[in-house]
Length: 117
Image (cartoon, rainbow, N blue to C red; front, side):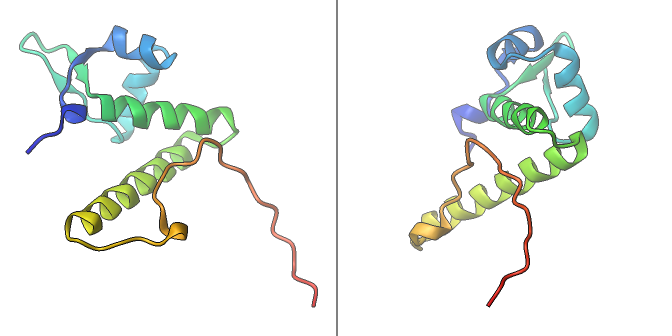
């Protein structure tokens, strides 16, 4: 069963406008394989709400200084983790407070420092 957030409902122009990017940015995500836009009967790209959420997260990571390939990998892993957590919940499992798959609003690069004992 497809959720409403997975329905390809937004044209490229509207999708770009909603998340504040250019159509070229959305095409680049299609080329990376992160987002596979649906197509209208006329062959025009259509994006789902879920795809727009992924694209917005990539944009956020790029703004924080990550390279496109790294940002796409991070978003892919975050999305898979969230899906796994949803599946655990569907099967009746529970997650502890430190196991939440919520995507952070900001990714911080942490400097690794040796621990001093």
